[in-house]
Length: 328
Ligand code: PEP
Ligand code: MN
Image (cartoon, rainbow, N blue to C red; front, side, top):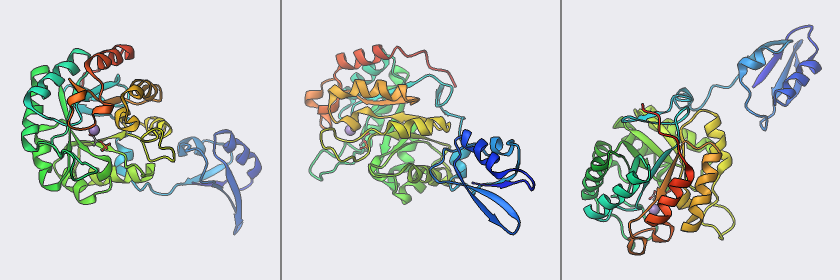
């Protein structure tokens, strides 16, 4: 941001007022004009407020690299009769890492609904680090998930792994999940966007917030009707926890009016840390939680160690004392 100082005004006084707003600047003079250039580390200050400062002639701002993301600020996302985002109560999304059978999906859906969850999660297509690990049941899982959710009045969030599957996944899901490892798979983002879906975009384990916002811009530019951001931990330096849950980033995106969801399960990698991280996420301003819950974690075909069992899930949901969700 560059602030042009009105001729005759005292630049130091303008600079001091801007500093009070959180905008640190350096003074530049040239061709009879005086300008104050904002330092990159300055807090984001609304240009409208800067224009009102006494002695300010004009404010020049670089065009945003993600205008479509900026335009969805404050709006939230409608998922059927459910609203996710600013102004709506926190939305609990939960279910198994992977859909394993029709019965498992039904059991999970009942657990989620009974505890006040509103969205059933579960992957039919699984991105696995090892090619020898369970890769998901595929298309059948989409049907099991949808039927289980419908029986309990839940919405569905499920992951899309390939461009070819985007239409089928968008057809059953209320919220199409793009996984962390695919955040910058631009061909996939275009294919998902082209379905017009609402998307849950997970943050890449090493992605900056700006890269995350630009990935969302890809989705919106391709036709997605809205994007919610899901923080699930980024790669830190300490292997003691699986990932570092970036609640600063959550607080920042939430403050910017974006719908933000936190996945404490993949961040922690172990079930005993899920509840405290979930509570911390809501305290930081998250509008929803994505939690892995399994009817019998000991038999889970993926991510069992981080899945909550039914009792732990009920205890977590009760401890959150969530208000009734706002209807869209
Ligand atoms: C998941 O939600 O099951 C998943 C694979 O998550 P992530 O993309 O965050 O690793
Ligand atoms: Mn998982």
